[in-house]
Amino acid sequence: MNSPGAWEGLTAAEVCADDPDRLNNYLNDPVNHAPPDAEPLADFYSRVVDGWEALLREHDGKQVLIVAHAGVIRAVTAHILGMPGENLYRLQVANAAISRIRMDAGRHPVLQWCNGHI
Image (cartoon, rainbow, N blue to C red; front, side):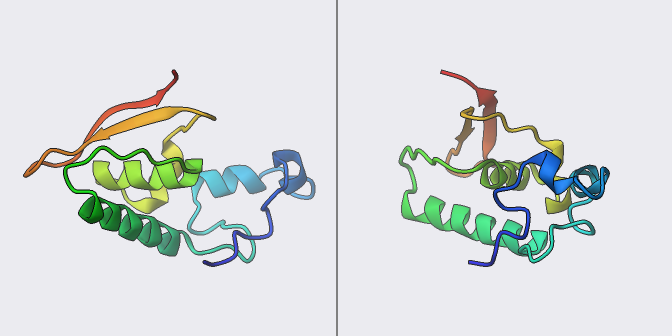
């Protein structure tokens, strides 16, 4: 696994301390404004999609619960909706939220709901 980058563990205020636009630039264009030393977005997206597809093959026809960080949830959701990886931050993923994807044989995956709470 590649490094998460120099911003790992920092607050938004700490990331923006010497450049107030740094975080917004990243959220608007994560390909060209990635954190220093971070895994390239295309690599992250591919790695998550590969893991998602492997999980589907391994658990075909079964219900599966995935507990993951917001970035992984964004990547899987973007993938099933056909969104390019550079648009990941157009998806809001709340803390401790629940999303549900339904997979029926022979059909495209369906995002049944996103950002739900128990």
